[in-house]
Length: 306
Ligand SMILES: Nc1nc2c(ncn2[C@@H]2O[C@H](COP(=O)(O)OP(=O)(O)OP(=O)(O)O)[C@@H](O)[C@H]2O)c(=O)[nH]1
Image (cartoon, rainbow, N blue to C red):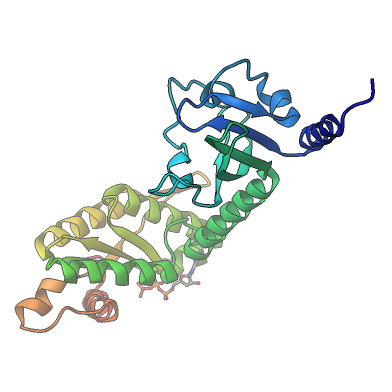
């Protein structure tokens, strides 16, 4: 018997829906019963078989999903409020989808949830790869290639922020600056690679002696700085002394040789400015003051703390 025009129309609609390269489903907005699932959905999530959307389309759901968008689809009067578009990683397949949800009138007159979702996993993966590359590039731009601690650029960026915070909360911050003594002789006597090994060891001594919130950096050559938030001058001096001793007592092992090294330190604290009735110093001022103190140690024979 030939199909009636209505059957032909319905057949055509089903053929179209089942041929779409997208998930299409309809669910009751209150009971969540899955009223329709196209072939794309059935092939990936199985037959609805009278189950609810969260039982078929998601994994380990004990009830309606916390991320269900139904509340976006109806207005206060209980009518459809237009299309809600969102992105979601499916808990069964792990694939990313762009979902377009809306409330529509079902064949029996009730308002139901219609979702059309297209797989955007490739785009998401590209976006994620780009984001990872951006973070990596940022890290490389901020990291000293030899010692892997912050470089000068990162020190200024992070340091300015740290001082602003300290200023806002009325807390002290201290700066330790140090420069290795007669470092040129290590290069001259043992080679550049030996000098590099010493710099790497010094950076490690720095990072192993400071707290997570402190910012250590290689400012250039054999010059290092550490910015210490919430740290007053006596505590900063303590750390400088510990570091000074650590450097002196830990010669670098290189090619079977021990390479001893000392450093000259300059220490400053924002308290010095505040106590003198001045406004909080900017990073450049702290660095200049620490540098002057460091220079005075160099002038007085090196291997000490000012
Ligand atoms: N191996 C190595 N040497 C470096 C690096 N950067 C700078 N230098 C060397 O560090 C040395 C610094 O020499 P100076 O500025 O005279 O300092 P110094 O010999 O430590 O003398 P004082 O600071 O006066 O005690 C130079 O020989 C630079 O070539 C580096 O990345 N690796």
